[in-house]
Image (cartoon, rainbow, N blue to C red):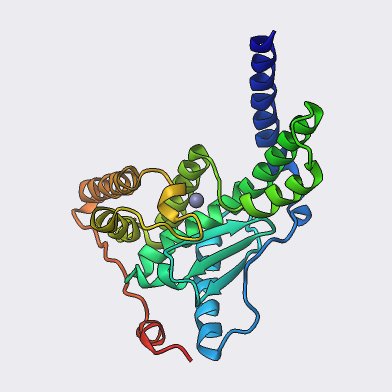
Length: 264
Ligand SMILES: [Zn+2]
């Protein structure tokens, strides 16, 4: 009897996941609730950084067939290395993340990845999954404060727990956007190379926000995927005319200056 119920719950859970993946992308983008941790009280320097991040994201997104309008938020007070997308087309970038990259290409990979989550409608899929599961728990009489946990789940988890498959899909799409923008993926793995060193160095410090590398596919796997694309492009170019002009662009000097300036 208990085994039968368990099988039923597992089945319904899969059905919820499947339905959410199917329905999420069909929900009008404008219907996604706005969830963002952006700050309004940014200094002039911080506003300039936010505008730069926005412009770079828009340049990358412009290669999509259907461009989703997004809002990019610069989080100057967050030292943890993180970037995340939330429902309603919001992309967040922390100071810790900008400090961890030195090239435009390394940063572009992160922005393109977060944009890809939005384009693939992952926040909408996740939200539907959470609503579905909460309703299932309520129906089974498992959640006594159902309404509360529903609000909590959709509010806090929706930008943190994309599945491994979603992360892989976002990486794939990001690589395609980078190829379109730069013609190569040189420098795209910069952040992940850095994180790999950090993982060795201090074995994952626990942060208040679930860290980038915990919620993302194994770092090494990501680096390998990016490098494989670049090797492929290189050999294609060499077959053609023997030349392959691939260089990553450094971040603009004014940005590095602004990042190293003492916070006011
Ligand atoms: Zn992601």
